[in-house]
Length: 238
Image (cartoon, rainbow, N blue to C red; front, side, top):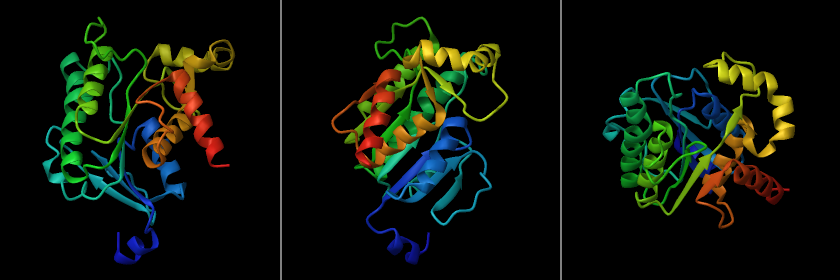
């Protein structure tokens, strides 16, 4: 971003988004670019997004096991939304732990070192278990990552635990369960409203929490809480 751009966006928040090529990360990026509170967006991922926008700096980083080279990129950031993850069953158990825990902890280490006052929104998941006793690896690993973030020293950490995330736009579903949920979503939303959330609504809540705060809500947001937070933040803007 040029000095002119920095002057134009003075007083607005500098936001970094990790995992913008994914479903929730993609909506996070779209909303952040339209959000007047956000002056600049830095995306970090394994491949370029192929998007051009005056607010956007797209950084390619292939090895999240070592984020040391991102130190300059992560300097002076006001907030981060971390959406990097993997579906259970799509990778081995060891790789799931690496992606869910190790990558999160390493990124947080470098971010906190260069932007210690940044707020951090983390895409966790329904059932995340901070006690480490769950039989489900996904739940244990998400809980482990949550605990690490809460202990990392950031002034504000927001942990989002959505249940079923409705994709909104058609996509290739990762497995049969997701295909079934998408097909039954209209009825599921009516019968179990607190077990579903739209991907774009989730993204808005994560961005707004990071750049505007949550009115002393949190730090953990279950699916019901995310819906209430999104409603609260929307109303506070209007």
